[in-house]
Image (cartoon, rainbow, N blue to C red):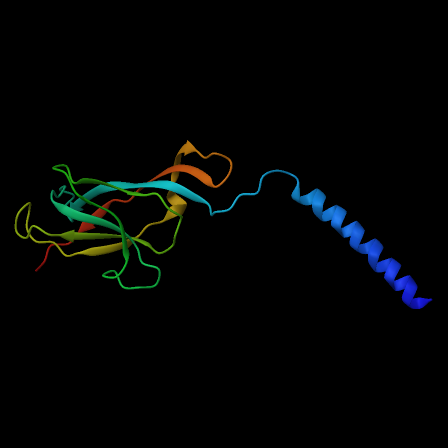
Length: 152
């Protein structure tokens, strides 16, 4: 008798859970992927006196725990004559995103400057375009100004 009761109980429980599981999965289409957004990182590169520096290489990299030499390059840009740069990242927000700033022209454009590596703070991002309500979260801008020191 006890075995018969357990069989009926298990059958009833299985039927009930199947109905509930089906009801939960029929809410809408399933999607696969991960959240992503477009990020524009921009700013001005200056010397310690605040003078804009032209020709400085700005490189945006995702490092994922590796050295800056081995990171994945997302975008690269040389500063214009007013020291401005703008690089793009159309991926996921990551705490491993770094901006690497290098003087590649030597003595030209105001002298030789030391390289610098900066963390990109996604918390300072300003949303400029709405997402689609699914995986795409929209477009964001991050302003990151850089002051470089001259080589001694």
